Structures are given as C-alpha cells and as structure tokens.
Length: 182
Image 1: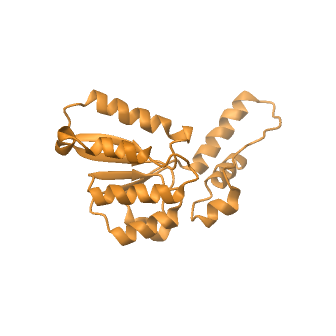
Image 2: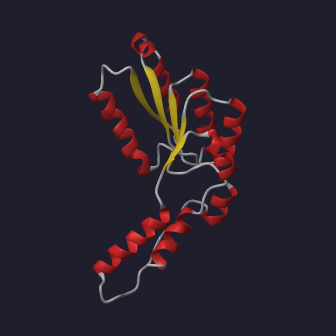
Image 3: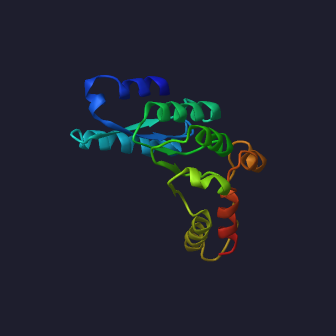
C-alpha cells in the first residue's frame, strides 16, 4: 500500500515539477495518525499550485518496524524535499539515517530518536507528556471535585520493556508522573 502511494506521488509529469514533503507514520493502521493523513490531503487540495506536495505514508501495520525504516530509506534515495517521521524503532531508524546521511531536513514527530542520535534530525514536534499528565489531573479534579478513584490506561503494544528496548522514551510513564504529582 505504502509503495503504491509512493509510486503514485512521484510518477507523471506534474509530479516531476513538485517537491515532495513526506510524513511517515508508524503504521497506516494507527488511528492516532489519521489526522496527519487528513491534513496532508487537505493541504494538497487547498494548494494545488504549490511547488510542494504532501505525501502521507507508512507501513500498512504498526508492527512493521522494518517496513517503516525501508519506506524512509526509499524516500531518501528518491531525494524528497523533507521527511517527518514518527519512528516506531528509534535505534533502527537512527542506524539507517547514519548510513544514508540524508541531505534533506528530517523531523521527528510524536516519538523522537534517542538523545545520542538527535543530531540526525533537524527538529522534533511532540507532546510534553509530563505537562499532559498535569493537565489530565486538573481536568479530572474538575470532573470529580470531591475526589474518587481513577484508572489510567496508559499502556501500549508490548509494554514498558518493549518501548525501552526499542530506544523509545517512557512517554506513558512521564504522563503518569505528571498526573500523580498534581
């Protein structure tokens, strides 16, 4: 699916004139990223005369970490103008970026590279998870001013060990910490 989208985006005479800005998500099956795909489509619709086109892509499944790395490598090889990545496997993505030494700007979104690899990207856009926890707690206090019991479901596929093994930040832990300290 992602390969088909990529082929469509870079084929034909109109595409030869446009520069591609790619957004590569962990998986097209992840509803969290749907808004990015919708935004790309809306931007393309509202800016048909722009020299840029937005390409929203990723592996079909969020479990396909190697597929995401391959998609980014293919985009680098094609020479797109810029890539925003939500790396599902930060160490693997960093290893590929080190090997390819891309000339275009790389942005990480939602999930970042490990601290030691952050020079491989231009910038990061994501959530301050501690502050999110604080805001969640404030909101809940407003809903339950006399107190009560709260259950926070903050897990993700594979749990903490999987997240840390992939080099990811303990994002849910930071959210929970902000919630508990409020």
